Image (cartoon, rainbow, N blue to C red):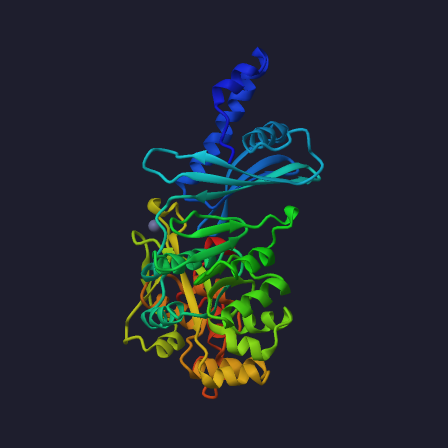
Length: 441
Ligand SMILES: [Zn+2]
């Protein structure tokens, strides 16, 4: 992989007059990357606006403006990023993408890789850089944030010798980190673990990792077929997004392989619908699925400034909170950059189909009927896992509602409907515990 060219050589190569401008631009771009890394940002956006250029960082899942500079500096900044990433500096009309090793901000900090993408906009070229912290300590199963019950269920599923274990959630929901945690858990010399990814985000010792290259014809399907002749125990399919990949993954799961994969779906039930859309028969879905995990990342309350507030009555009743037991709200202080939150963690919905659930999948039952059986078998809906984290004071109610809105609420499937309408009640303005977080600004 390319690494950032040394600053000195470049400055010397420039003409005397241009050197100072080039130096200043190099400094600026380096400064942005280092600052973003220190803030633990996942992405840097450098955007030409109508009047000025804006730099925004995505921190804990939320974009924040960090800097503005004159619009006429955009071409130099974009060129610098392109030079760093070995992209064609003369191409301004087409989107470009590349990857570059940036290095360590300091000896004790993780090595940073940058995934760079440029897009020509009306007002100029826009750059987005994804920061990949390479050797940062990664979560193991115990630190995935699973509740005790979910962790036990997940262990049973992932330790099975065969079957399909799918992780779902929108982009940026942490599902890749969860899959890596599962791989780390399974990684021992007695198992042949092979992956097919796009791209490989982390290199893992003891794991055979392949990266797809569609331009050369190296697709998920081609690599997966080869793995069928590679004596694999566990296969990670980075993303199941086409029928061919899905069919081979299902076949592999049914012939003695443990298949881990991610799929774009909103919920566990949504994943079954997605597999049907990809052309898999209900019989194969019901037979191959070992489990489905749906997840979202929520921001963790800052320990230094969080403040106790009384919970809305319905939430207190639903969670069995003791009389007078408060929940916490976000305030904001110096330690958390005034946002009230610091870091993130995942909330989960873990579906482990029992006989009845499988039976309904085989019969092609309605999603609500499959969900009903899964809930009956012990699946806790995503929002309930979130509300339990609220009761523990780890995050706020508004944060949970922000990420679970639009997800099947699950309650309608239950006859007794213990929490029916709770979300509507809780989102009404002025409810205690509701905070106007930065996401609503
Ligand atoms: Zn704080």
